[in-house]
Length: 183
Image 1 (cartoon, rainbow, N blue to C red):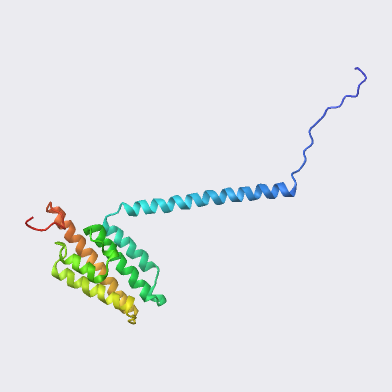
Image 2 (cartoon, one colour; image 1 turned 135 degrees about the vertical axis):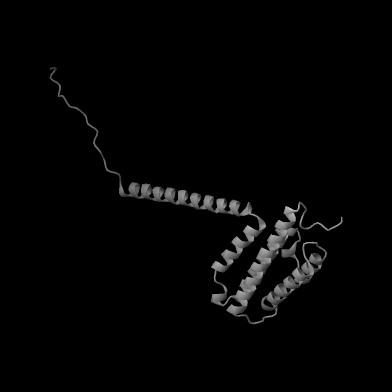
């Protein structure tokens, strides 16, 4: 031995300060929150892409189910319900037949539809009744009730299903459903 003191230096563990632990905790919470936000955003985007790829009928029915799930008539929000209900039907018509229904007044839409082969006089009459009765609630302040909202929902659902059947039948025959006969 050389006479020197033999000392082995060992690192001493110093616990982190409360400030450091708090900062690490906040960073972990922020990271988890960011991951959750990204997952939520991706699920919403995935749902929108899935809905965008649906047929016009499937998409309209999904929109109708979402609307019914909001329970607007049960909460007394009839005007808002009719606005959304007619928007579902108008968007379907735009997607399926190419008529810019959401951007038109009821009269403009009915005039455009009258010149379209997919809209027979019976269908136009039914749509006129549906849209004009909805306009009375939306714009003229007509009082509505749950029975009227249910009837309007049934009319919308019937129109959508009947039109989808007509479109499918026309497609099966190998022609476009909006093509004029004899042209």
